[in-house]
Image (cartoon, rainbow, N blue to C red; front, side, top):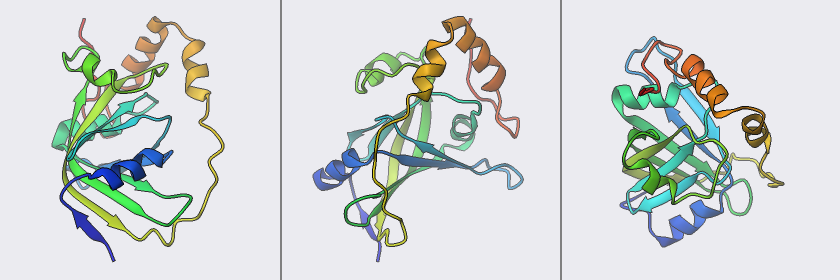
Length: 183
């Protein structure tokens, strides 16, 4: 039986901080558009307040989450217990994208451990917090975070990364605007 919460209290915060992975889901307004669900890790999620979270978007070949959030704001973050007692939490909310040229970026970034490449930060104002049993989630043992992102970034210059993002992150699969690139 699921339960709804009014805020992220201390027990929920401690549970969230123990999780090594979370998922982000968004969708465009168009029913013909692509629904997106992305796994995230590398210690990139932070609870900012009782009804607000943020995560580092480290980049990739797509820009679906950013494009969807910019179009309609809808986002859900889901965390599952892969060890210990079964549990799932979902944070439903309205997202906003904070890019490096945004005045809020540096203050938000300071809340996270150093990462090799931060494309932007997704800020989520939570409208609904709910748990569910998680009985169907298998148990896994966490071994370590992958170093693939660090290796990819180390092999490129900042100019290379910017060129890649201009090519791959300017628009979503459905043609929605992605990252902005001020001169």
